[in-house]
Image (cartoon, rainbow, N blue to C red; front, side):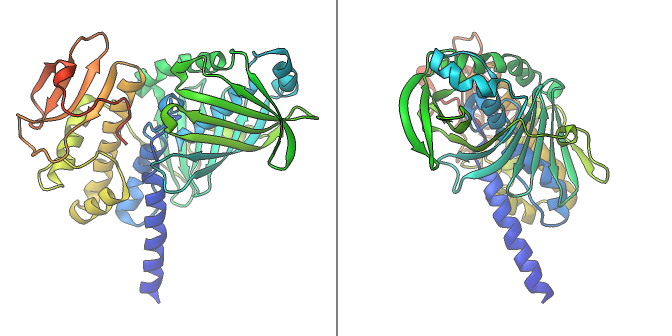
Length: 402
């Protein structure tokens, strides 16, 4: 009976880990950041001792500014600022007149992406000024305070709190300063009135907001509003290149939301996990660690997924697993921060199959801001050289590592 219970718990944990770790680390984020990798990092300690839940960095372009279940935090932010920002034509302004006065709202957020085997579902709460909360169906709670520059992720089952201070990620913090302005610019373009439709069983007016601000990483924004009340019924955001889709429904405007819901203090009885400030050393250490535990060969990808966790659980002493997992999280965060701050562009991991120590084959390359040539890091993790784009191995990309 005890063995049966243990096996069942293991199945539940593996499913939770798979769902959380295989989720794409929204755009930019956050949307979307620190959601998958950060949750995964947060869970490392308890998983080293016993099976529990784990969970972008950066999976959905620039919506993941504060990082991943932080990607959903960003989805909530997108939803909020779309509704609370001004702009648009007369008809659109009429539709938004009622909701612009709202100071709080809640909605359901569903994120889909090719990398996700199933959508991620969150209940999102928004309260001025700039406070956000996302409750995932798998139990993780993410809270962000934009003004205070802090994100906290809670695992009620394990009684753990992961704290991310954006001061430790100055590149992302700097980008966050311009995030709200970008969102406002996004909807300044004249929306298209696509007429009346039935949506979610209700008569609605359909508006499409064109991608005037391509920097936001969104190809299209669709909003359906109740024809009688002007209340939002549904909002859809789609990333360029169909990288992801965020759908928001079940809106409630101006509900009473206790400030305690948005507290970014570690709750009593919770253990605190600080990720720490990511550094270049974490990138080198992380790459070396992944190669060492892959037969001294760099892996197919740098994803912190369930397969990697299972492999490490069998090879790395439990006492060391937490710190190693945190180190891998910092590696992803460092790369994400450089990409988000546009210090790096066209970042690409090309190390699959390269032997650790091979100074003739590259493992990753990127284009520094303002540079004419790309930087190329080789398999010995020491040699870095400049290279023309035409000679780069593999196709460059801006997509993040996780």
